[in-house]
Length: 119
Length: 107
Image 1: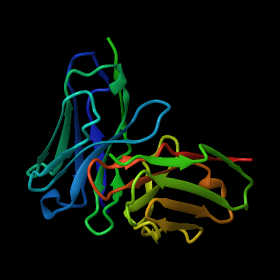
Image 2: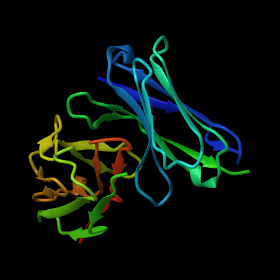
Image 3: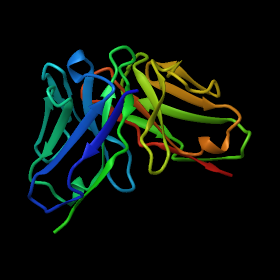
Image 4: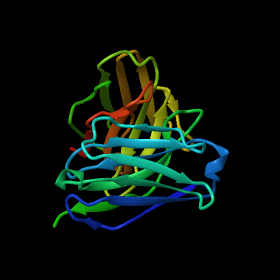
């Protein structure tokens, strides 16, 4: 059974960097698929942030105001997200998820982690 | 960027009734569309991909249809666990985008 688990600080100060990690179990990231981050700000819908595959190819949502970096560590079977210079608008529940190769949809998701940007 | 518009924003349905949710893409996406169910405090769950193919383990109560720019998710005979938020999402190109969601609530 594929499982994803987000981890990271729940509170980040404005202008600082938000860093999250998604640990994957039940499947080896190096075997394939795309691995992504999606967020849900309070009271709004889902927003795709970024995605990476096992070989390091990346795609980003150009709509995000804060600079974004996604990376993968196949040795630890995890991938990470960094948002720089965050503002209050980056407050959201952040989900990591796997994008399937056959269906092309996000078939496995983490439970999500709330990150609040506040001083 | 392809915009996904869902309607209605809220749908009030009685248990046992049918719910019909709509999703419109701002340009053609063929059948590159997924539907997700999102219950509060839980991870979103993939229901439908390819516009009409049910994901593994998804009840036959859920069905998807459409192609091009107009799509529909139908939930027949609503059960208590079906009252939730539903999102559509295209995956034809980058950036991936979601619709604003439809909340299915108990009437």
